[in-house]
Image 1 (cartoon, rainbow, N blue to C red):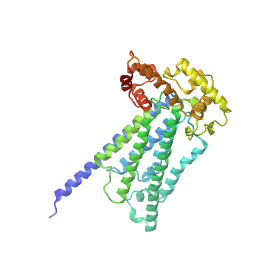
Image 2 (cartoon, one colour):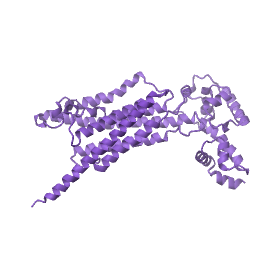
Image 3 (cartoon, rainbow, N blue to C red):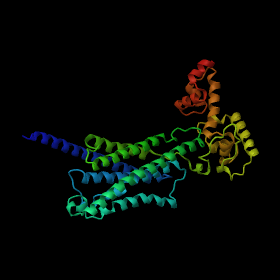
Image 4 (tube, rainbow, N blue to C red):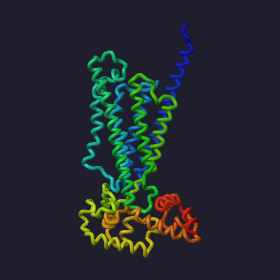
Amino acid sequence: MIDQSHFDDDAMTLSFDIYTEQLGLAAGLGISLFVLIGLIWRLVEPVERRMHIWAMLAFFAINALDMLDSILFDGPFTGPAALYQWQDVLIPGFMVSLYFFVRGLTSSDPRLRQTDWVHVLPFAFALLCLAPSLALPGQMRIGLDALNIGLPQQRLIAFGENAFWILWILVLILYGGICIRRLIRHKRVIRDLFSDLTGKTLRWLDGLVATILLLALIVIVDEILILADLPKLRSGMVGVAFDLVLAIAFGVFALRAKPPLPRWSKDIKTDQKQQIPKPEQPQETGASYARSGLQAEDLERYAKRLDARMSKDQLWRDHDLNLRSLAAAIAVPPIHLSEVLNSHLGLSFYDYVNQFRIKDACDLLAAPGLSILEISETVGFNAKSTFNASFRKVTGQTPSEWRRRHL
């Protein structure tokens, strides 16, 4: 005898999971719409650089459409059949918009270029892959009238959909790699421009990129499981958590993000591939400075002027010291100062200033009077944690340990 209660329990569990997912999608959709309104409001404000805002507008518009599509077609509701599956064409836009978001935050003067048309290709290939399915009438596409589709056409549709998900994986890897590369390069750039890196390293963006890659991989695994007729990962409370984390985490980043690079930094042509020369190698001017016109004797003269002015006026004690202000103080163009530091001294601007700050701190720690926090602020650090990390990196000791050994 068949136990009917067992089937009733399974049906109730399935129904609960479906409605829980729908609630999660509705909440995620609401958050996405809220973020979209916030981003539109930021566009109204007098913001100089807007690429990162436009990129996140595209990201959350795609996310909102994706959630709306899931609400209409993955649950108890049935949306307009003609719209089914068209949302998939926009899926590559998640990574494309993330790329422009990262580019907007890591460029001193971000703007569209003629070559940016290439970023339309993922959408064009997605449309091409899904074309055999999208060419069908809505009712056939949604699966309500699948018996009228011939076997050759079914195979073509299946091939196109598989090709689409392979394309999505390639887009994920390609754009994810480009974003990570830009972030690594950005960290080198800011060390050539600023003496204080607080709020400029975009470490949170590393986490954002890692998060979006992880979530995208979860989606891919989910699709594979569905194709294999296995239980999917994003169901019930897991699906709710997925949708909410996606909307909340990215929403916070999108609304709070501000480009850290000043416009003047676009004129500092630091060579991102340049390696610090080894002691046994002759120091030569980097390729990025080939047009500066500086000779070896010029570099030596500027270096001596720099050291003399730093020592005389203790310029490192300025918390907001940057490459441009230091270049103005010694009366040389910023590009020439950058060349002196990178090519002649083999140091980034941050490391050059830091060595003075740590030496100054060591002298002050060896004398009674000032607390460690006061010393940190006196020598130019904006945060005690940054001071402690920098001091330990240079001396191998904490400021407290140094003071105990030298008092």
